[in-house]
Length: 90
Image (cartoon, rainbow, N blue to C red; front, top):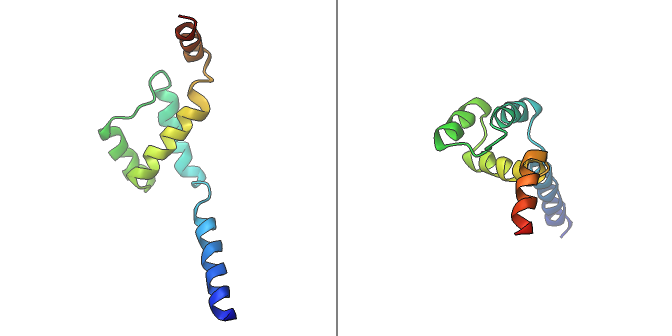
């Protein structure tokens, strides 16, 4: 009855809480790498392994962060958006 529903609700809340933002010190490491490689922000497997060690994140989390970061920020970069616009005109 009620006890099972309470347990289900509690588990759902905990699951949603875990799916939040990454810790600030973790993202600062990732952003530092991003800024120093802004022209081509695709880390090698060695880079990713180093970032896993430095941040304590899982490889999948590193990969997802870079995918999201490129979607959100890379193409808004004036130098890359000019290249994209020129390709679209052709």
